Length: 87
Image 1: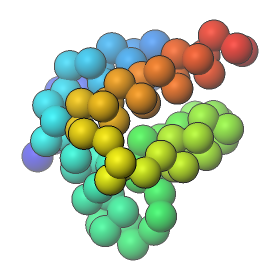
Image 2: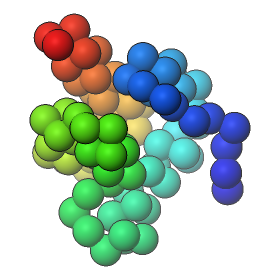
Image 3: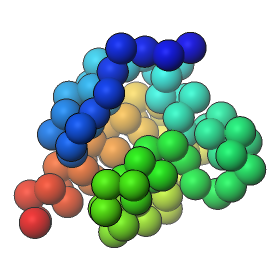
């Protein structure tokens, strides 16, 4: 189900990630791997598409089975903020 959210940069991504439901987070992190038949999730694919290869790799390394969905959300936000700050 499409949402009204479209991020144009990392700052907007963080703002949106705070706003989306855990169902959307599940869709983009878990279902994406099955849908794409790839080890990559939608967020990592998007980071790659905007030239953020290192961040894409870091998010791809996350094991979503070791965190709650809310914990996963916070970990991704932490990674994006840390990455953006270091640039």
